[in-house]
Length: 360
Image 1 (cartoon, rainbow, N blue to C red):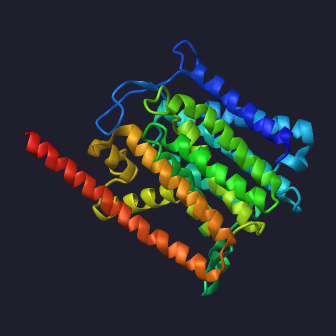
Image 2: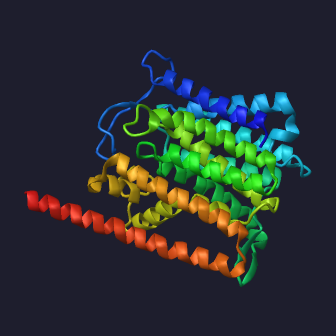
Image 3: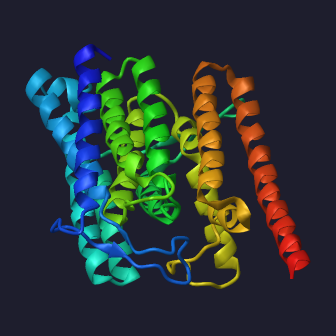
C-alpha cells in the first residue's frame, strides 16, 4: 500500500468517527433509539444507526480513490477482465441492503420479506455477474468440484454471511471489532498476494469500522444496527468470493478469518433448530452473549473475542504459507479448539450459577 492509500484509510477512519458522533446526537434527523427488551444485553435506550457512518465513510473513501488514482486502483479485481462490473454490483447491492435494512429497522418487516430480499440480492450478485465458488480444496485429499450446485452454494453462503453478521451484532464492540480485525486481515492477505484493489477495498472497510468502534466500544454510545451489520456481512462474503474466484486464496482463508462469527452463529442456529425454536426471533443464546451473562460483562467478553479473532487471522496467514499437511493440521486444530472453547463457556456458566446459588 502506498502513502496515498494509507492516507485514504486514515481519512475514512476520521470521517466515520465524525459521522458516528453526529448520529449519537438526539438532534440529528437520523437519530433512532434501540429500546431494550427481555432478549437484549443493554439496559439503556441507545441509538442504532451507526452503520450509516460505516457505509457513508466507506463510500467517501471509494469515491476519492476513484478520483485520485482511477478505477483500476480501487475497484477490486479490475486487473482481471470483467471484475470492475462485479465490484460495482457488489457495492450497489450492499447500498441497497443498507437502505432496505434502515427501512426494516423503522418498520419491522416480516422474516419472510427480509430473507426473501437477501436471497434476491445474493442471487443478483451470483447470476448477475457469474461470481461463484466452484471448487473447495481439501488438504491431502484433492479438490471437490461443486458442479451445478456452485451457484446455489455461493448464494446460500452469501445469505449466511449477510445474516450471521446481524446475528452476532448483539454486544458492545463485537461486530465493529470483528469488522476491523476481519477486514484488516483480509486486506493484509490480499496485499501479500499482490491484489492491491481487494486489499484497499478491505482496508477501507476496516478503517470506517474503526472510526465507528470508538463510539461502540463498551459501554457503547451507539449500535451498528441492521443498516450496518447486514451490508457488512454481505460485503465480507462478496469480497471473499472475489478473492477465491481470482485464485488469490481458497475458501478456508476467509473461513478462518471470520470463523469466530461463523462458528458461533452456525452452532447456535442448529442448536435452536433442534429444539424447534423460531430461529428468526431475537435471543441471548450465542456464546458471546452467554459469556457476558455469566458474569464476564461486555468488556471482558469482547476482549476475549478480540483475542480469538486475532489468533484466527494469524492462522489464516500461516495457512497461506503452509504445505498441505500443515494446512490440514491447522484446520483440524481449530475444529478441536472450538469444541474446547464451547466447553469452556459452558463451564463458566455452571460456575457462575453455582456462585449465584451460594449467594442465595
